[in-house]
Image (cartoon, rainbow, N blue to C red; front, side):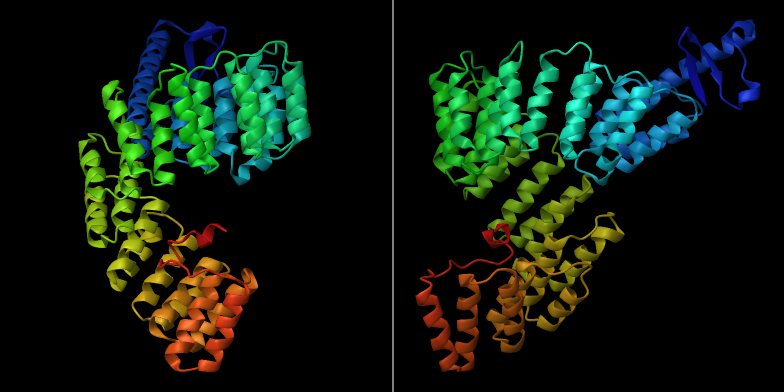
Length: 521
């Protein structure tokens, strides 16, 4: 294994064993030439891995990394972002331990990657241990490391650790203060966040935006709007963040109103602004506004990258113009997974299951690896087409072929598929064999199938399960009314209708339990 002496960065030597280590001062001319050749070789490997990573060829980059005869700190720092991008935090930590064992000391960039990998995973339990290692390396006072560590502590729900990290930073700049405000907001400690913001020696646009973001995240929308109005010099970033937060909070109309105010302020939107606005149009099905935004993009010559194009595809698909969605999709030269998912999902929502499956096959042939969202769309497409065998084939391939663990939503699609096809026994068996408890969507899909095929016994079983999880949902009573009505059980129908009237439930719109907003409640 390879590392360098910080006093002589041009001299490299091998870590074969501690007893065999040679001092750089004892290297002869031949040894120096050999080390220079090794250095050139390592640099060449690193460049190749970087190129693979930049082209999203993460698996190829990892294979090259594993084959490297010699590695330096740059080698590890080159592969770690790729593993983060591939959502492989376990491998990130494994390499971190490996480089420590061979004598390579992590630098600020390495540690930031480790903390980033721990976010939203079980590895956040290790944050305090990695923090201790950071102190041993005397890197805890770094602004760069401190900001990443504060974010990790906030994600782990540790407010005490968050404050300690901030106090350890020697020369606190505005980014450190912003990280503290953001951390407190993520923990829901709005009073401390506001107090920190008020005591900041310097504030920039990011500081104000962080505070606004925090209030929106904690559903204090009016307070966020009040703070936003106090920003004297709003730029495109502050406007875009505000619009995006409205979209994330599903306040789509407010997001569009904010966009109008931005345009009136003579602030020029960028591609990220337009992407958020298109998502807002998709959220509230405003096709006319979406078309106007599309025209604005073309008018101002905003470069349409894959992110912006995907937002256009998603907007047109959700607003009902599937032909326009396909036209935009085909114009994207380098399609990514998100754009494929938007197109496949669009076909599925329009009941074009066959077209959705055709696009899926084309995606696979293009070498794009599917994810969890892809298979939800594919299984839903099979459900619309009544393709039970094909649905089972795709369901089995999620884990066997693509290494994706089936989640509740995938099982719900399969139960819905079997229910629509009248194979209710198979749907019931699938629920019993699930590795987790069925939720409202799972049992709702079974109840929907029972409603289609008038299966009273299973229908009542599903209704009882739904009632335990979420009482008094109108779809429960209306479906049971349909089942018993077709069976001729008039007294039961009268009772159920009486309950519906007493609770003043409105008639439910026709939709699948899997596709309805019921599962979000």
